[in-house]
Amino acid sequence: MLLTLLMYLLLGAAAGVTAGLFGIGGGLLIVPVLVFSFGLQGVSPQVLTHAAVATSLATIVVTSISSILAHHKRGAVRWKLFRPLALGILVGAYFGVRTAGRLEGEMLQLLIGCFALAVALQLALGLKPSQSTGQEPSAASLGAAGGVIGWASALFGIGGGTLTVPYLSWRHVRIQEAIATSSACGLPIALMGACTNIYEGWGHEGLPEWSLGYVYLPAFFGIVLTSPFFARLGAHWAHSLPASLLRRVFAAFLALVGLRFIIGNLM
Image (tube, rainbow, N blue to C red; front, top):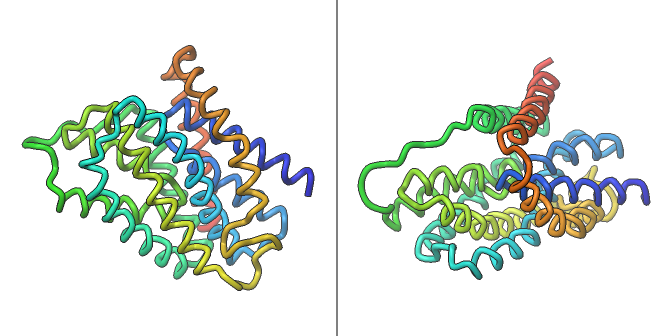
């Protein structure tokens, strides 16, 4: 157990650095590593991917709060945009967890693999959406977008930054405000996702000891103990290390993860 907890502390550190360096949540790193870890622990293949996604979302509840406070102090969060987005996100995240619960573990890994490959391509090529024409989005369009973002984020165990930031940038929101508002959106995604996963996984057979629904508590505590500090360190490094090289390295990691999940579940 001590060795396992140490691994989760290191995972939290790596996830924090990733979030600070690249401006995206650590879920894209946490989920595949937890899938691997749970497999080594002998967790049932039927539930290990769901547990990895749920635990990742639970950690984002904690890490997103410090991020929100930091961005709010700078006055960068667009709360007027956040409110309709959050309403859609809450609904979407609920159905995202329900969707994941109806998928076999192998299919869920396959979908996560495809998403990881898509993000890897975006990072490697530096793809960014061009701005839309017209004014800032209406409350209705924000709510609809929030529903899609919440659904996908809860399904993949991420905080939604890879989806929210491009969407807000496309809708004429300054990149600094898009990142800050996206950080705020991570909290309703994670809260709804984690709570629904706790309910959905309650009493489920095959889950390891010390699980709260699908959330595996030793991994949760190990990750949240180290990720906030290392997120600040990653943000510092982001200003001193070559960004293009860092993005390519992380893109290569995501590509390997994506291919591993896809090939491993198709063969």
